[in-house]
Length: 242
Image (tube, rainbow, N blue to C red; front, side, top):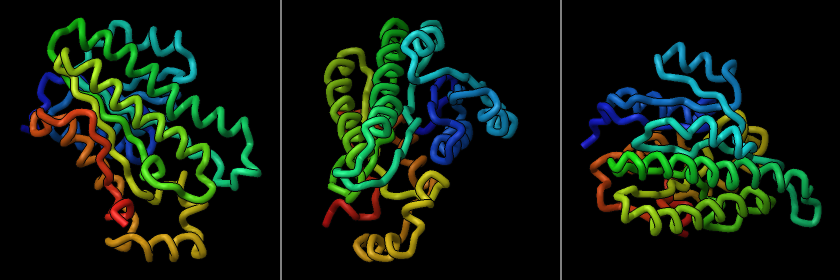
């Protein structure tokens, strides 16, 4: 069920913490991983560690995405590239930050899905796509207007993609993690006045690890999830169950 031998899988955001953990776990199960990121330099440590293929391209450019993916045979995709933006009240929100977050988290995932799906359909092997969303798409979080909007849009894209690609035996799902204490999140979620009240509302009482997000991503890519599509799966220690 977790054998990915001869299954090429693209992971965007591979130079980030969750993306790298996903690459490592996919390699453990035999996948031919293509680790994507904004530059060869950022991908180099992971490529050296795991032996996967690195693929650098600009998510903001449709031409760059089309060129990178047009002849790339794929069985699976993980849309893991993400931008946190700035946590700020709505009345102080910066429209440039909003546009930047939407460009990566939503538009970038849209472009990758669009062009990856074309090659997956042409190959006729079926496959699976997993979008890395957020608990911020499911519940309101103070100061997360830009980020929450981008991830809620991503969840909607997941459902539409599942509907359209299902006839081609391509499944599409989202995982919606709680906070993972990465460098991107630490500047806000690591502050005691933020961390302590938040964790007090989390039934499991702790932040997630990268590996705890990578595991359900790999599950949703696998044959063990062969009847699951169109799902947004909270991986949040029970936070959204409140």
